[in-house]
Length: 66
Image (cartoon, rainbow, N blue to C red; front, side, top):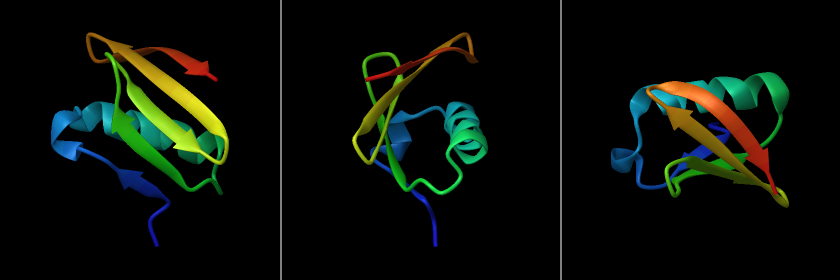
């Protein structure tokens, strides 16, 4: 069973999706989460946590929690 649901996958960069999934697997291996395109980021939410993965030129430059 997959731990991730991806909304509007066609709007997301495939490499960025892989990087976010790798980050989540390493830091939150048991979390079920959702990825959605945000304002110049990939928005991930799980439980009561919102995370914003910010990319520039194909590189992950910041992860913000809210």
